[in-house]
Image 1 (cartoon, rainbow, N blue to C red):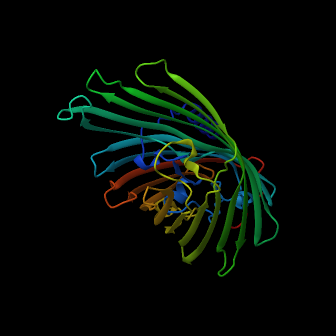
Image 2: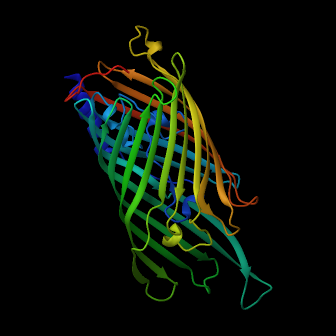
Image 3: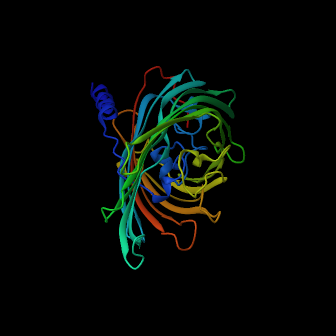
Length: 414
């Protein structure tokens, strides 16, 4: 009965959690914003997304080849919060519910999963005040202020399956339905009433689909190690843009446009996980993005989003001993680091670079395969030029997995 209550409470959390994106990186104003990959809180604590991390308790969001690996039917949720500051004096906060996933084992060789995970974030708010010479009297200046805001992003609604075709090899596939909305506002306020203030509001709805293919090979070099591969192929993408322009005099002008000749970036990932010694595990991962078009098509700026992106991460884990009698032996401890080159570039052609340190802990609870994963992160991100503000971010992630032995295919030796 307690397990049913726990699952019901988890469902209420999913339905009622307020998704409040107040702000994020000022560099997320370009194109679709900061692109991300699906990941769990366990993977977050290791500095990777988990393309080579099978987990008999928690679904691998990035690699469907591991969906056969689960022994329990269950639900996984994730909550994230972060605070971003820059050396120009800006400070922004973001808190959000970042996913819901349901996994179901079918026998010992097949597992299916469905759920939601974010693929991009657009959250920023920054302003600037300045002055320009008056047209009537160049010796005098006219003050003005510019305010820029943006919010939203794109999410993946996925469904798929994983299949273990032999003792060492497994494959998986999923269809990812892309849905999102990005809202922007640019406002110019003039301090002299003889000059007209103006604004531009924009709303872009995103619809599309991708196919995800995953593969894994076990015991490639050492016993029980894992080599994972994942590729996400874009199938279709449509943008519906609505803009409202007001020049301070005439009636606001509204225009609508649709863009269909654009696709989500091609994405490939490789990962390797191995047991180092005893309960120590090590994992390394490489993620690569290749745009099929300039993703800056949904905004008007001097920036571009048609560059290849690269992310390299790795970490270590002192894994849980689930059979231990002492509670501290059941805890898992993690730490990792990742480096990233973002797709976006400035007018000088340079791409933004970021470095992130992460750490985490896994806490099993209950009588089944339930687990709570917590992780913290500290990140530093450079701009496109030496004069651009440097951002630092402190983040927190909480993931909860609630599992039940419904339709279980039999516990396998891990």
